[in-house]
Length: 115
Image (cartoon, rainbow, N blue to C red; front, side):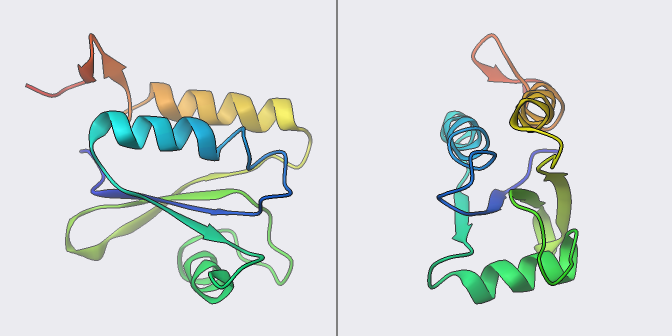
């Protein structure tokens, strides 16, 4: 099932976030025609970011970024990724795996599983 939107909780200064997570997910969201909502922890979005992570993500007072969420019908939110603190390369690999798996995989110019 394809999400109706993607949320990314991130920080501009974080190399796991920009460009490793935000850029490829923004591109895929555009490809699929779904919105991406970027919640910056260092901007006016901090309360919305904190609320998203507290309710649906890997919450601690000093939580890791990026965290990625899919929103499905009827407001259901699923946490699908947290950046890997062991290194940017591991976060990049996790993002690549997310992009290759359902519901974001694309085959022959269309979303995998679409008709």
